[in-house]
Length: 257
Image 1 (tube, one colour):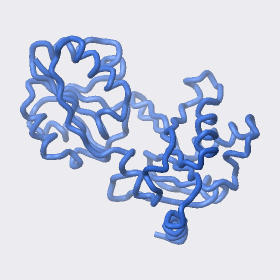
Image 2: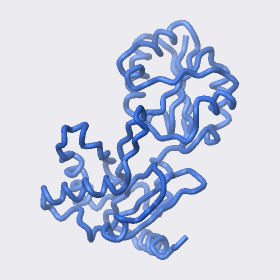
Image 3: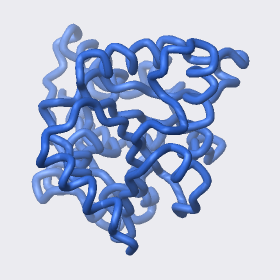
């Protein structure tokens, strides 16, 4: 019958919009995934809020099986996703496949890191290509050179770079900002382009959307060994700065809270 992509929001189940909750309650069957976004909730909390049972799916369930689409051919299915439903391309692929099969689709958008990052004080329209730093084991120990090349392209164009950090939900592993910085420094040592060094400016955004979120700005050498608490983290590497961006970042740098 139909498939609804229902965004949970940035931090936990309390970020769900009224529209998202209403849509979830109207579905015959609910699925959820937590592997594309670290969200501080549980299936039990979502079930209590919505008042329905929810089946948690793995990456393999979503990307390699027909479980969602098979059910959506005959029932009203809701798919609960952390952040915004289409910040992960795997969900767009699912929607595309549903459309090809003639399944009616609906989307309930929500807050995501791509909107929350505006809180760091940089102008949103000046962000270039987003990059992701993967766990090196996924690349058999090799460095993600393509990520460095995209960072260089952004820097050459004066654009800011949002850096997302890898997660392995099944193992509850979330890359730390320290590990991501170390990988970027290794890439710099390999590529020798003077794009990311210990003297580069960097912003670390910790636990965006939560009550204990934290934003830190400074030089890489000043930040890389800080204790900034629990994940999730993202990095922002500034490009050319407008004077208002400089003023905001200077306030951040001097904020000791």
